[in-house]
Image 1 (spheres, rainbow, N blue to C red):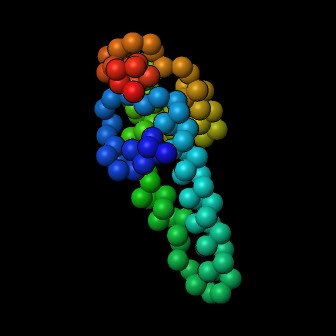
Image 2 (cartoon, helix red, strand yellow):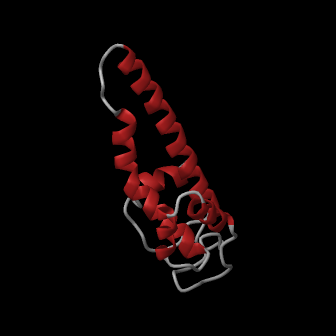
Length: 122
């Protein structure tokens, strides 16, 4: 739970450092659940004739922490955040990024900081 809250509060726009796989995927799960709830709210409200766009605004609000945790996840695999530009390639780029996000992070310190799984950093 602290990993998810950490993405929303103190690390909202922190692009430096490293993020372990657990932190990234828990954030992604939280985003997925929030968007699902927002879509249900949008559908219910549109059935009554009110167009709010809750899902749109949640996506806008979560764009910065998504890119921040994604950049930190890439840093954990010793890659620069420029790899996020693969998002611009439909399907192939998205699959490529998902594969990169699944890789195990480099053990020990790399050029982006200390290992987040090291006992002294846990």
